[in-house]
Amino acid sequence: MAPKETIVMISNVKLLERERDVTAPERPDRAEVEDAFRTIIRWTGDDPKRDGLIETPSRVARAFEEFFIGYSQNPVTVLQKTFEEIEGYDEMITLRGVRFESHCEHHMAPIVGKAWVAYIPNGRVVGISKLARVVEIYAKRLQIQEKMTAQIANTINDVLKPQGVAVLIKAQHHCMTTRGIHKPGTDLVTSRMLGCFRDNPATRQEFLSMTAERD
Image 1 (cartoon, rainbow, N blue to C red):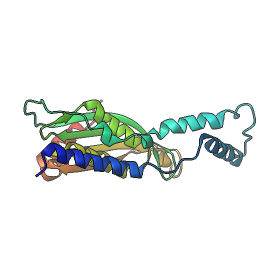
Image 2 (cartoon, rainbow, N blue to C red; image 1 turned 90 degrees about the horizontal axis):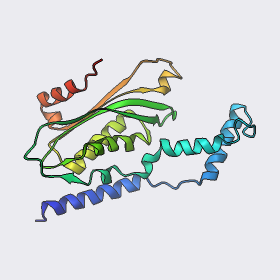
Image 3 (cartoon, helix red, strand yellow; image 1 turned 45 degrees about the vertical axis):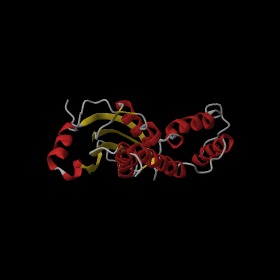
Image 4 (cartoon, rainbow, N blue to C red; image 1 turned 60 degrees about the horizontal axis):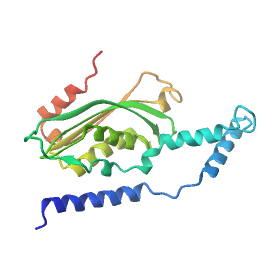
C-alpha cells in the first residue's frame, strides 16, 4: 500500500491537472480586446476616437486583466504548503469576513461581498492567508455565487483532507441592485458544509454563530 504522503501528492497532482484543464481556453491578444472595447463604445453611441475616450480601451483591458486574474492562478497550488507541528490541535479554524469583488457571469456586473471560511484540521493546517487567497482566486473569475461557494469549500476539502469544511458567503449583486429589478441593499447568502459541519448540527451552529456581523 502506498504511503499516505504519496497518495496525497498523487491526489493533488490530479487536482492541479483538472484545474489547468478548466482554466486554459484560447485567449485573444491585447489588440483584439481593445478593438472589442472600441466597438462597444461605438455601440453606446459615442466616439472612441475623441480625446476623453481614446485611451479607454487600453485602460479597460488592463482593468479586466485585474478583474479576472484568477484564471491564471491555481488555488490547489496555494494550499500545497501545510504545517503539521500543531500539538494535536483539532478545533475549528475560522477566517471571518474576507472581503471580495467578483463579476456575475450573466451580466458581467460586480458582485461585492464577504466570505467566512472554516475547517477542522486533521493533523495539518495551512497559513491563514492561503484561505483568503483561495477566496480571491475564485472571486477573480466570472462567477455565480453558488458555484463560487462550492468551489472554495471543495478545493479546501480536497487538498487539506480536514475533518470538515464550511464556507458562507454574503454578497450584493449589481445585476439586481443597479439594473433590472433595482433592489439596493439586498444581499444573497450561500453556504457549503462538508464533513463534520454537515453531519454535526452543533459544529454547524458554532460556525454560523461566528458569521453573525455585529456593529
